[in-house]
Image 1 (cartoon, helix red, strand yellow):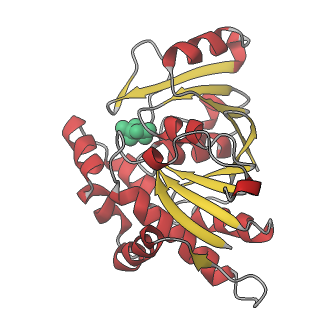
Image 2 (cartoon, helix red, strand yellow):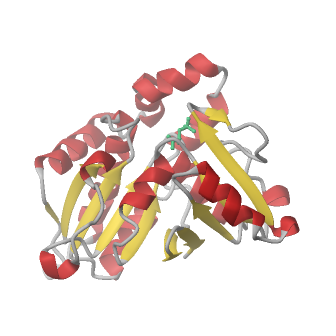
Length: 251
Ligand code: 3SL
């Protein structure tokens, strides 16, 4: 397995096909907070997450879904979009609210990353809580060329997404010990992410708080519970997987 790490801005569609050397699997990461919220929503019984880069498209799709089975989740600049049922906090997606519902979701960066790699055959999302489960899935499905995609902030590098990319890669390397399942780094960004993981693996929350988006959230108000939830490692076994374009289901 060849693991490469990119930022969303480097994944401008169309992503090349497998025949042209493109990836057979992609893992989208937005630690703070979209992919953490996606994992917790599915864990808590949401039927699916349908992700949109654009709010107008989200509104149109949500309007066509039965009202009693839908929720709209929208975040821009770290704040909930006015009139939406949810913002982007993993603490808010409790079973009582989300069970059985489809969540129509749009966030500043995370859902844009999903749109950028929508054409990749196996598309998963990862966060720190499910990083080992995602790594196991990649190993078990025999993924050969994997792009790990950090969502960042509006095209910029993101410390916390790079940390989680290293966390996924490190777990995959530990699992793929059999000689026929070697895991290799495909670029320097992946090597750097692994080094970051070695540096912060025992204190992930400090890393998240130090990151520029962590500082942005702190500036918006108390997000202590969000930080604790997003920084937790290996607390979930759920693997969100794209089942139709833009639609993520538990697997
Ligand atoms: O950028 C995103 O997609 C969000 O996860 C940002 S926030 O953590 O909800 O502010």
